[in-house]
Structures are given as structure tokens and as C-alpha cells.
Image (cartoon, rainbow, N blue to C red; front, side):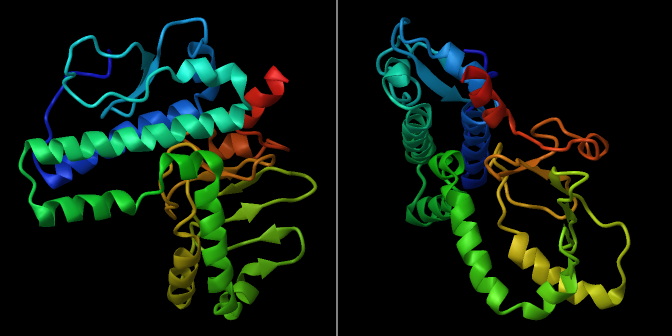
Length: 267
């Protein structure tokens, strides 16, 4: 396997970093790299597994031959169910097993290096603050954020009235979402100018939008990063995750994320 040289994280922080790297790689396989992942999971091949690596890379490969293996093994034979069910259901199934594997690996390290009750609890809480792969792939995490935002909106009418301009444009600080007849793509970028009077408003908006999740890597919204929204599935993505720059976004009339583009191509 080519995920980089093996290493053994020994502290809670190191195990969590290992968890995040493996998780990011598997999310890539099931979202932005889904077409390649789909092709590699050929049902005519032997039992295949999806591996995530600390380097944020992923790989579809045969299971380890050594018994017992050095690390817990992912779900075996994910390729066999590929053509027997709807693609979204198959990806969701792989996502669930991937979440279980990530937890198994993390707590394997915890057991191996003698984490006590407090360490195990701290590790779980750090992991639990991230959405699961299943939540990212199915969009459940986004729905949870929307529900939370709707509650927040009732208590922030002032900030909402200050941030809406006209019918076609919506300017939440500190990001800009644009959806107009001339440019149907939706994207967000940091505002360059701000004054002291806006700081309180920006803090409220940061709380409202701060839990928006990238559909590719699953990480939270950050005001200093460029984001773009898919007009088909309405998921938000870091520009860097889908290789879209602010300049390029200006000329996109309708943006389709890699997953939605691949689905249409196969159809």
C-alpha cells in the first residue's frame, strides 16, 4: 500500500491527527474522487477494501495477508455490492463501514499505548466533534447545520436585515454569496474591507455559518477561505478541494461539483 511509511501515534493529539488524515482521504474517495473510486471497485475483482491514510490519501486494495494484521482491517468486499444497489446507497454503506474502521484504528492505538479513561474520553470527544463520513456523504451533516441555523436566524433578525441586499444578492459578513441571472453559480469569498462597527455583526454571522461543512473534506467553514456551492446538490466546497479559483468562479454560470458531474456523465 502506498499511503506513506507506517508510524505509531502515541498521544491523544497524534492519534486524532492520524484519524483526521485517514478520514479526509476516505471522504475524498466518496466525494470528489468518486468516479475513480467507482471504477476501481470492480465487482469482478477479488475482495477489495477502502483504506484511508494519515497523508489524506486513499486506496482500494486487497486486504492484508498477515494474520493478525498490523492494524484493524476495513470492511471486506465493498466492490461486490456496487452494481446490486443504487449508487448513493452503496456509497452510504461504504461510508458507514469506513466510520467504523476509523474508530477501530483510533482506539486500537489507544489500547496499544495505554490510554487511560480520561485519554479515551478526550479522544472520543475530539472525534465526535467532527461529522461522520456517512453524514458528509449523505448530506445529513448539512441538514443538521441548516436546522441549527434556522433556530439561530429567529434570534438574529437584525443581522439578517442588515445583510440582505435586494432580491438576487445575499451578502452575509464576512462572506459573499452571489446568485444572479448573469451568474447562476454560488460562491463565497472573504470581504476585504470592514470597520469596527461591523465586528459584532461578523461575530454573529460567523456563529451562524461557522458550521457549514465542505462536501469534499468535511471541514468547517472558515471566513478566510474561498468556497463555492454546487447548483445541483447545493453542497458547499472549499475552492481548493474542487480546484476552483475565485477568478474562475466569476465566469461559471452553473457550477456542478465533481460528484454531480460524474453522475450525469454515467447517466
